[in-house]
Amino acid sequence: MNPQELKNIMGSGLLSFPLTDFDSNGDFHKEGYVKRLEWLAPYGATALFAAGGTGEFFSLTGEEYPGIIKTAVDTCHGVVPIIAGTGGPTRFAIQCAQEAEKVGAHGILLLPHYLTEACQEGIAAHIEAVCKSVKFGVIVYNRASSRLKPDTLAGLAERNPNLVGFKDGVGDIEAVVAIYQKLGDRLAYLGGLPTAEVYAAAYKALGTPVYSSAVFNFIPRTAMDFYHAVANDDLPTQHRFLKDFFMPYLDLRNRRQGYAVSIVKAGAKIVGRDAGPVRTPLADLTTSEMDTLKVLIDKLGPQGL
View: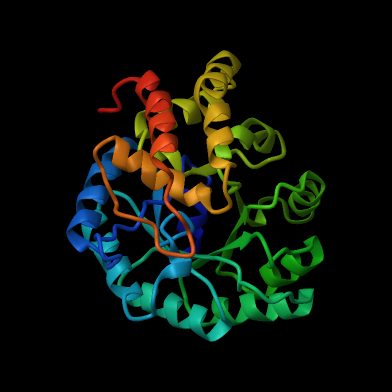
C-alpha cells in the first residue's frame, strides 16, 4: 500500500485500536490476539491500529513488537489493513517503523516521543527522521508532549510526501481549525481523543469526519451504528447513545488516570473477549467498577453481526 492509498483509507470510515492480549503473567498472548483480530475484522472498520495507544504500545519491548505487528498483518491479510503504532525516542521509533514496514504493515501511526518537552524544531526533526526512514505512509499523532503548530506541520508535509495523516488527541478546536485551514486536503484528518465518539460530531463540522473508536473492542456493532449516525447526521441516534452509554461510560473512565485503556480491557472481559490484565503503570478496574460497566454494556443488547 502506497502512502496515498493509506490516506484514502483514513478518510473512508471508522478506524479502531485492537487491544494487545496478555496472559496472566503479562506476557504477549499470541493465540488470544489472533482470535481477537479474527472477531473484529469483519465488523467493518476500514483499518486497525496494531499496538496503538489502546494496544499499550508504551508498555511493549523492542523484542516483542515485531511479532505483534506481524501477527496482526498475517491474521488480517486481505480483510482489513493494519497500521502499526510507533513512538518513543527517535531511534526506537525508527526501529519500530522499519520493523513494521518489513513485516507488511500498511503504514504507521507515530505516537508522541514521551516525557520530555521539546520545541517545534525538535519535534519536527523527530517526525521527519521517522518519515525518511520508511517508504510507506505516516500518520502523526498530535498529543501530550508532541503538539504541532500549523506552520510546523505544513513544513513537514512539504518535505515528506509520505506524511499523509494527522490525528488529533488534544481537542484544541482553534488549533485544529488552523491546521485544517493551512493544509486543506494535503492530509487526511482523524479524531483521536479518548472515547472519540463524544467529540465526533464537532470534529466532523471542523473537517475531520472520521475517528478511531476504542469501544469497538467490546461493542463493535454499537460502535459502527454510532459512526453511521454521525456520518448521516442522525442526531437523535447520536444523542440516545450518548445519554444511555457514552456519558455514563465517561464518568466511569474518568475515575482514575489511565482508565481510558483499562476500561476497554474491562469491557472486552465482560463480553467474553478477555485480553488479560493491563501492564503497569496502568491499573485494572475494581470489581464494583466492572459491575457498573457490565450494566451499561448489557443495555446495548447483542453485538453479533
